[in-house]
Image 1 (cartoon, rainbow, N blue to C red):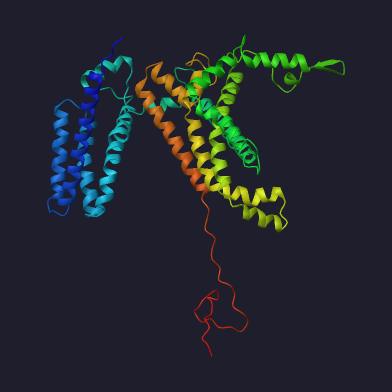
Image 2 (cartoon, rainbow, N blue to C red):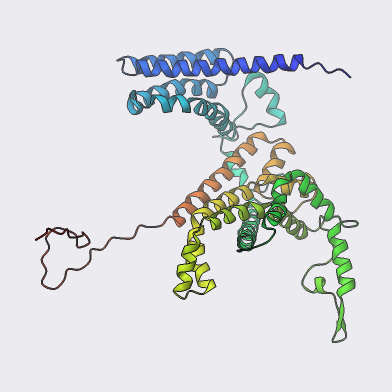
Length: 432
C-alpha cells in the first residue's frame, strides 16, 4: 500500500508560511510603534487606523463586536506605547509579542464574543439567522433573561443551587482526599533508607500517566451492576469474611456501608462512584508535589529539632507543614479549580448524561449547550461559573495571605538616651 504524504507536507508548508507572515507583520508593527511613539500625531493616527480597520471589517459583513474589537486594539496599543512603554523594553517586547498576539486572538477575542452572545437568544431556531446575517435577537428586553434563567429551573429539571451545592461537595471531597492521601504517600516515600522507592513511585504515578478517558471507561466497567469488579469484590468478600454475632450474620463490607447495588441508577451511588474515580486519578499529582517539597527540606533542620527534644509529631507540625505550605497551597488551589471544572469524569461516568443525579456545573452547562442547543443561555451560564471561580480565587488569596509582622523597637535600657542608632547595630572597635 502506497501512501502519498506530499499533499500533507504542502499544506504544512503553507500553514508555516502563513504563521511566519503573521509573525513578521506583528514584529514590523511593533518596530513601527517603537519608532513613532513620540510623534505628535501618533495617537491620532492610531485612532484613524482603528476606525478604518473596524469599518472595513463591518463593511465586509462582520458583526459590530468584531468591528469594535478591531477599533479598540490599535488605540489600546497606542496608549500603551505612549504612556507606559515610552520607547523602553525593546528586547522584552520582541520576545513577548508572539505570546501576546496568541492570547489576544485565541483567548481575549473569543471571551469577548462569548460575552456578547450571552445577552442574545441563540438556539436552533435563531442559529441560521446568526450564521447568515451575524445577528441574533436579544434575550429579553435588555438581554439579561439568560442570566436570570441560570438561577431558575432549566431544561434539565435541576435547580441551579442544587447543582452548585453538589459541585462544592464534589470539589471539597476530592480535594480533601487528594491532599490527604497525596501527603501521606509522599511521607511514606520520603522515609529514609526505603528500598524500592523508585518502583513504588512509578506504580503510584500510573493513574496520572494513564489517559483520563481510558481510565474512567475502565472504572465504569468495574462499577457495572452484573459483571463489574466492585460488586463482585463486595459479594465475594462478604461471603468469605462473614461471621456470626449475637445470632446474626455480619458481612464486613455491608456492615460498614458497602453493598452490591446498581451504581448508575442510584444518584447517590453514582456520585460516590465518580468521587472514587476522580480521587484515584488526582492523588498522584498531589503526591509528586508534596514529595518534591519534602525532599527540599534540609535534614539538618530535623536533626536540630530532635536534639532540642522535639517529638516526631511536633517536628511534622512545626517544621514539615510550614515548609510544605508554599508548595501545597498553590497545588491545592490549582487542584480545586481543576476539580471544579472536571467535565471528563462526570460526563463519562454518566455515559454522556444518560444517567441523572451526579451532574456538576460544567456537565450541566455541557448539556445546555450540546444536548438542548441553547447556545446563548450556555454562554451566560459559563460566565456565571467563571464569576464563581474568580470569587473563589480572590477569597482564597485573601485568606491565605499572611500579614507582615509589625517590627517593634526594643526598649532602651534604664537611663539610656536614644542616639538615633538602632541597638541592633554592631559597635565597631575604635582601637586604643
